[in-house]
Image (spheres, rainbow, N blue to C red):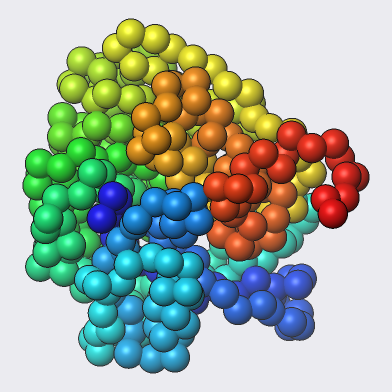
Amino acid sequence: MTVVTFGETMAALRADGPIRLGGGMRLSVAGAESNVAIGLARLGHPVRWAGLVGDDETGELVLRTLRAEGVDLAHARTDRRGPTGLVLFERRVGELIRVIYHRAGSAASFLSPADVLPALDPPPALLHVTGVTPALGPGPAEAVRAAVASGVPVCLDVNHRARLWDRATAAATLRPLASSLTVVIASDDELDLIAPAAATTEADRVAALLDAGVRDVVVKRGADGATGHTATETVHTPARRVRVADVVGAGDAFVAGYLSGMLDDLDLTGRLGRAVTVGAFAVASAGDWEGLPTRAELPLLDTLPGSVIR
């Protein structure tokens, strides 16, 4: 595999309105790591997702969806110790979306190193992990530590979820991983969770991570684009301007685009350009991953608004 990733993928229900009032909901799947896996697969990269789902119909939905998207599932399996996790999305006011998790005691909360380390043999070109997985419990946290220590190049998306753990616990778990990471991707309000506590400004945090051996430090800035740092250069790339349909999943799409650029040996400007382009596809489409582009579709955002491709 070119890329291996692992974590929890859940059944996802998107409500048409306030959940407390009832009404229609659309069923799909969602998970930070599998969103990235789907994004990479659509761009033509071999990618494997490892993880546990419940021995239930929603678990079958997860596996069927990932398989249909071309993601390798040789190290994914069902587990009867817990159900497949569930996430509810509620568009509450305008573009404000509220997320409700039902993932305590889920099958994925029993993830362990034994579930993920075999997926790294033979070693992939890249391992992608997120800060979501260690927040699920001691077993998943140990799985992340073991995988990061395996010696393969690692990308970490900090991806802090305040409903899963507090910032102090997240920082205590993630900071020790820094010296083993190749790429760090974080929103501008997450960088302090991976950089040393002594670094108090963004510039200091970036410098500390580069000094620790991280090759690429990428700071996501939402509608303001993203900034990439290496030991030799810093590049800022503005976001692509699209009509916003759904911001959920945009960060994962950005990561998929950035890693795709790495795998294609693009320079820093090219990596960031692909990242913001794939992120824009996600923002302009409903759902976590449904609107992600294929490689042939990447130039579509360069066409004039209102154009019809015949």
